[in-house]
Image (tube, rainbow, N blue to C red; front, side):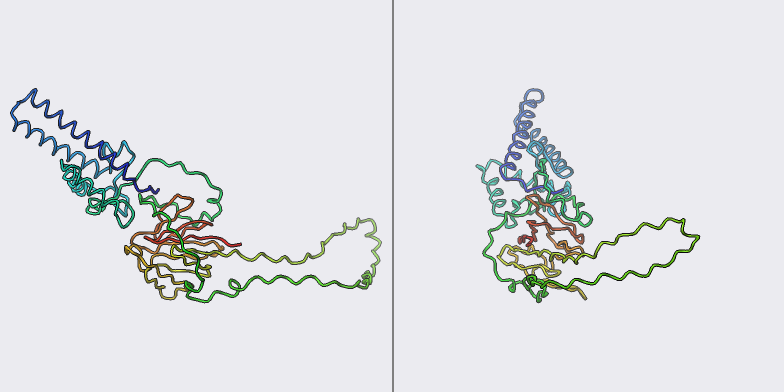
Length: 363
């Protein structure tokens, strides 16, 4: 199951809840120390400092093992490892909590504002601040989302759709504005087959025919004289054979077209490879090689492949890329497992790193 990236407002709310609870608990420890132990200043400071360290360790263990804290549990957030979706462990959680603790010291909000600014300016568009990059973490929203049932999602063949990806991964970036469609030759590396390029040829109109001569009646074979002993037997009922019907011409197969975020578009004529510098394997028949420029190097050299399956369905498959391939269907995204194909439907969007494409079906 996939979860979207957490909004910065919700993250700040969780941070504020954690800080209010922590400071309130430390203040209570100080008051109890003065009331029941000693009113010496250094004694109170020492007890409060020890409680602060203990509280820091407890929150770090909760964050490293379960990815949560009181504030994040209240706001429906979770901190996971970027790329695997697993808990980050106690060590990275201690480092992450230390950076947030130092940034939260009384500095007129400069430290926290700096971390928030680094999250806003994240080049990967995943709202990861400097402390997230330092500990390889990402904050996701794990609140349940009610998905609208769609009849179109049931059209594809289920035996090849990958439904086993259970990683916590970020949602894809916001759809970019596409430029006008360019020619098919700008992306195609091989000639399309004639049945794809050539327009369908209309059948010629039927020619009027003159009245045909009536065919002579078929000659009946001479009837054989039945033997006397078979006269009492009942003759078998006649069988009827319908006249052969005219052969029906199968409708031409539908054409699938892909549109990339830079305006490139072409009709799928065979297997296609996408990546920064895609290269086919030895003996691999490839119809399209599609180089994709990546601003943040999030697209692998040979990132993924797509093309028609044996039954005519268009499938996409990740080829072990570093940042993975994401399939977005009606606003719901999921990560594709490497080496496992997934069927595509009309209107689906596929995200390769910081690049994306959309597939449409043409009648």
